[in-house]
Length: 370
Image (cartoon, rainbow, N blue to C red; front, side):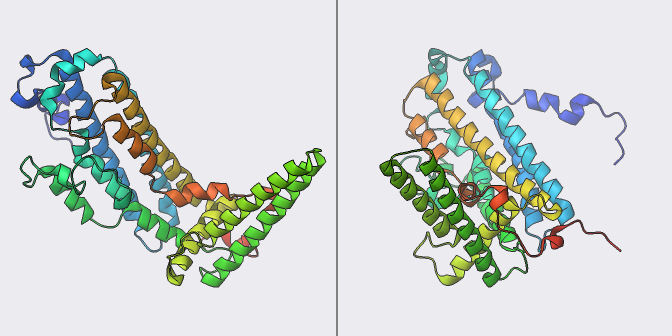
């Protein structure tokens, strides 16, 4: 694309437009104190960061909607996730700017914000939707029956924020869904077949049991008392039972056979990619998993840091939008976990020497076109 003649920095970045947006309700910055202008600027910066995050997540989601997902494009998805990580890390630092404002400074203009709330950030809700946050994990803001209710105008009429969220909900499946679908197609030491998957998982669980026996022997050699050894034995055996229940998707008694097979395939794909990551064709899939964990962790840290900033500035007051304030923010940091299977699989991984051998390792080498 050619550069239009006469282009300059301030026109390209639209500096004057940006600098005219900090006037608050009356659109007049001259009537505001420095603390309120700072408050507005930081939140505007967050919304700009959220816009970039949505673009990166949408690009990655669209890639994983392909069947099959081209191996050569996994690097681009990992780069999108890493960019989201970096943005959240930068966003965490912005809370330091907010903390230059004292409690009394904030109270000078806080009442003017009622009933506005950061909960009404449509883009943050879009990020949660696009990632795949389940509705049943959402923490109620206050008296509203749905998180969408808080995105309406004062009298319940439609608002741009709700329009954004509705459009996002209608805009395709979340990242979690398509990413897990991709994992379920992982050729686990052979074709993606339920019997092959089950056989691989049973071999893996058998290796876990051998590891438990070895650890108990170490406990005996360490001259622990019989009671100590028995306690450790029971703890290790419980760990293996829980791991087997997770891997074989028996942790949800209400799931039907088809659902269990799908979950087995997802979890087998996770274990396989993590356990045989040295195989060339698994290197980028493993990088994807690591980037997804890093991304969710960075968002959780951002939520936790947000809660501590709010507690520092206003204590445990009720939020301007009617929420429980800090308690609400702390609950979101605890409950808003999306990629739980990718986190959980770390509990069941084995040391490299005891990972069961696979029969078709050559199928995961570099592919050379003729």
